[in-house]
Length: 319
Ligand code: ATP
Image (cartoon, rainbow, N blue to C red):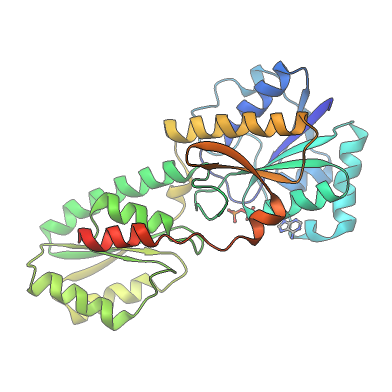
């Protein structure tokens, strides 16, 4: 391996820059040149590719987002489009690639590997929706952002006997909701895993009001489950709380990465380079029981979503 490329793809996540820095620095120290590919697979296909020096990745470890930019290019599923990307790499004698993104990005990485360009995937997404890793790069930072926001909502909810319905991201993965629910002492958490029975949730809220005499209630709900504004209105109509919906939205994607995310990204970036130097491709990096691991991408994409039953049970015992 003489030259490797690196790109970020899909939704951005805090810590992607720390991963770019780690890959670049570790590779350069191993005598391998590094090329930054801008705007994900789009930049790959269009040849928006520049060398990265040690200094190019200085002063970025604390920055959110990705200095390489990210994009979605649905056409990249087409082998003819992939071929264009491969041509761009061959022209520059780049023989391997690190792809930081979510499972869609992994599919692209697998397709390239199958066509002779070894790729390693790093999990860069705030959603924590990649089963082969306990944690994705960006999850811890997004969790901190959610917790800070919900803590503030709780203060004002108490003053006004309010029920705050807070929608968080997660893309069908309930982790952000469940973890923040535990961390904030929420009354109710609703995820794809818990399911959503509206009347039952309203009944439980009434109980918090009438029986438990709570001054406020926090409901944390994953995105893509229900219209939270409509639900908050029903809370006002059917319970003693005044319901208010807050959609946290893209603030969850931003911010300086937490130390946990920076260290995770650095460890994963190092692993990606080591795998490529060993001539290995088609794998994605994860962390399991605090060990950095690598799993074939095909296997990772096939894994059923991890059960969070133990955490859900804990939540239920805490309310
Ligand atoms: P997240 O969902 O966390 O934002 P992601 O990587 O899953 O990240 P996607 O939009 O699903 O985001 O995928 C990112 C890019 O990966 C797509 O725009 C496309 O360029 C490429 N991609 C997705 N699926 C495939 C596929 N089946 N084959 C090749 N490339 C793919």
